Image 1 (cartoon, each protein chain N blue to C red):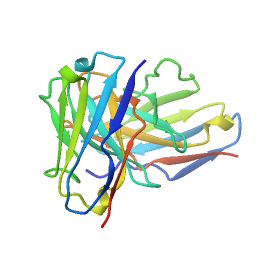
Image 2 (image 1 turned 180 degrees about the vertical axis):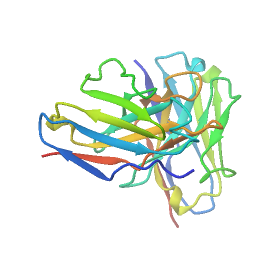
Image 3 (image 1 turned 90 degrees about the vertical axis):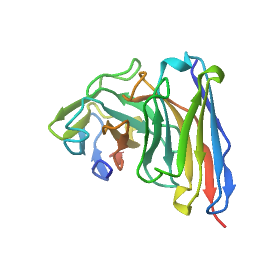
Image 4 (image 1 turned 120 degrees about the horizontal axis):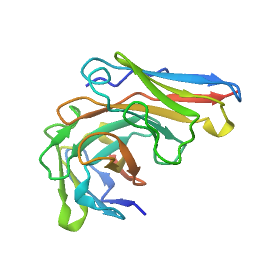
Length: 120
Length: 110
């Protein structure tokens, strides 16, 4: 059974940093691309960042480019999102998500999310 | 990177069919056959309903179908059921290792 478990969310002041982690199990982690997708309270889904199976193809939404960094450790079956210079508009539930392929196709499994609140 | 355009809401009666549109550009929807659709019930994680424009994952009822014409993709739900009432999102590959979602559509079953 595929499981994606996010951690690292919490309350943080504007301008500070936070690192999200995602522990994956139930599938061969290094065969698939992974993504972070967020959802602000009461709003729609927003793709944040993606990374292919070997970290050779990485992309970011314009809204986070230059502030967020995605990475993965295939030996640890883990995905990460380093978030710097956080803003109030980054407040959202952050989902770790598995791509259906090794590249960028569609998302077939989602975690339950970790809530990030940026507020003073 | 502007969100794909979806109608805010659609509605239909039980047993009827509804179609949700998803309009992008030649740089996303029109440029790639990597359009997917997600169903999201309140408080739950999204669920993949359609991938690669028109393919259904195992376990998704064949009442759900997808298509694309030019820069617009569509999700059609036939034989509407009460349990279909919720939010739906489209998503497309947008080049340069990026994905883009639509703003979401709330489906009401009358």
